Amino acid sequence: MTECEKMKLGLWYDANYDAELLEQRADAEELCFLLNQTSPKDTKRREEIIRKLLPNCGENVSVGTPFITDYGYNCIIGAGTFINHNAYLMDSAPIRIGEHCFIGPSCGMYTAVHPLIAEERDRGLEKALPITVGDHVWFGGDVTVLPGVTIGSYSVIGAGSVVTKDIPDHVVAAGNPCRVLRKITEADRIGGE
Image (tube, rainbow, N blue to C red):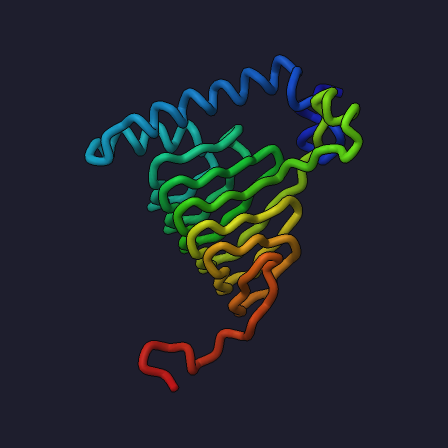
């Protein structure tokens, strides 16, 4: 079994020294570099690069720069989603972001898990756990999402949160570690009380 196959199965794999994975990451890094150096006004060129870098991206997705991802092909991004500047999607495992999500600036989603034993970590071993974000989710700035987390649809994650555990649908959650603060209700409508 190749290291890439192990990665995709969520097994421990050689993330640091495997030639195939190093090449895939170099290809994604090159596309990130090109995207990050392309004028915001050159929308046609930016769209071409985004389509190569993020082949599993829906229609009308907006990606602010700078933007970084490790592989790109493991990012599944729903239509109408907005990803603000300085996002890092560490997609060793799939990162699924639903439709019409607002991802605030400087957000990071990290799928990699490293061994706690230093000698194993030094061998370049890691495994990756998927991240899932439902539809219509809003992240404030500087949100961090850790491996294996699912965030429910229509939820709001407050700025600066570190999401270590699953968050249900239709809630406001915030903090480090992130925790549910309350349900979103009709009273939250503009003009609602």
